[in-house]
Length: 249
Image 1 (tube, rainbow, N blue to C red):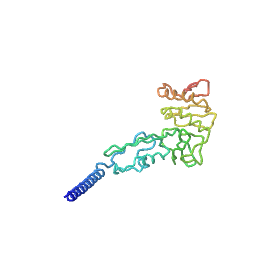
Image 2: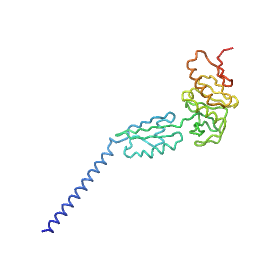
Image 3: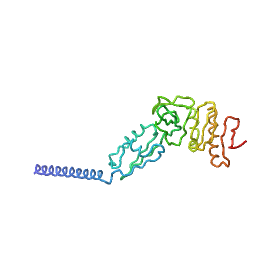
């Protein structure tokens, strides 16, 4: 009698085990089917924070494409891939279910464009070459003339002293002021000249006392926006900055 009850009990346990396993399989299949349903397909890629690297290029670098399954996106791997590009300093990635991916970019902003032996280089504040172009790019950063870099590639650092001083000066400016400058000529290191977008000269002179000269530059380009009379140049080489108006005798 006891043996019969034990057999029945074992059968009951076996049946419950089978039922539980089948239940888990059914739930797993439902979850898999749900995860791979068209609901969780990437449809929107939202890139923010980028000024110079286009959203299309961000997606190309990271190999992200609309139509991918949201659960198969390896966000850590995407982040590491993007950080290998020298133009990108920080990346934050977040899935927004059911079908969007948010990518927040912090760029290493180029401070200047410098001619080189095969085109032009975008240079960051620490002198690192961030990118290279065959033709002059349309970035709103000044072109440095009077120097031509050779044998430099993306990731290299410039060693030219006068250029380093120009980068320091540009880094001391705010974003608005930098965007008002179209060119900086270091052809004569004793008489460095910056040009605004309206061809007004800023005669910087020697690249010294850069904190003071940067402050004067910021004030000057701000005042240019509301100047009543056309200005030919401002000269920093006097004890007090001298402003020359056009047609002024």
